[in-house]
Length: 119
Image (cartoon, rainbow, N blue to C red; front, top):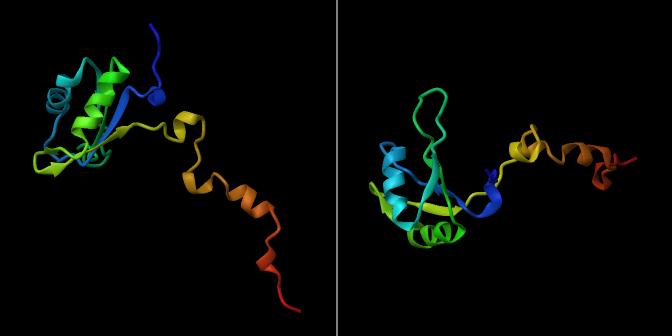
């Protein structure tokens, strides 16, 4: 079986989800566009509720594209959805450092022109 990655344009980011939306409800909203392989709603560790976004992975790229075109800006439970192609996060690219630290080492190693103390 071929392993899929987030950036293969078959996985959609779905943001703006209302608190009571479930994986089953999200699957039902997106299944008219094609076969869904997976629905993932990351949970908040403290409240055990979803964090207001999810990822929907389709079997075919064209189905994901159709879903994005039709569902971006649509309303679900009174909330406007934001639907885009999912982008891989820093952790999946092999980095375990926060985003704001990715270039900090380089910044502090380069001499800073405006950091000179006047004589």
